[in-house]
Amino acid sequence: MATTNDLKNGLVLNIDGNLWTVVEFQHVKPGKGPAFVRTKLKAVLSGKVVDKTFNAGVKVETANVDKRDFQYLYRDGDDFVFMDTDSYEQLHVNPAVVGDNAKWLLEGQAAIVATHDGAPLYVELPASVELMITYTEPGLQGDRSTGGTKPATLETGAEIAVPLFIENNTKVKVDTRDGSYLGRVN
Image: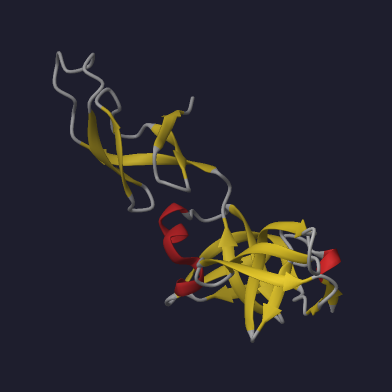
């Protein structure tokens, strides 16, 4: 348990059985009436953002969320298997928890897995990953200066838009947040 005075960004609260991360908070002391804390909370599982106001000094229940470094090993049926880089324990993660990050996962890749009471909540990937292009149409001669893009398939099976000069078997850097092309890797 903590009070509203202990709130800080990134703190995970347990409100009505749901886990919420504090995105923003502001202590407000109006000239008339009691002080209060205005917060913006994000649901850990769904990503929904809500505004909630607490009276000053009220106790709020905090949740113990453990974020640790893991390495992605392989798929086991539907599950993704991650290994804790410190204890070498393996953790099976449901595809719903991995979500859209699955299309950027390569075997041996580092990731952060957040758990609560031993159950995985979400998987955080680095901001960018380096992946090989397995197939893309050849660019047309003379189209190189237009700044156009073409679809390309990555080694994970994901499809992104790349500039026309990119060829097959080229290693590229991809933003994991929006799937955009960031550049070639030498």
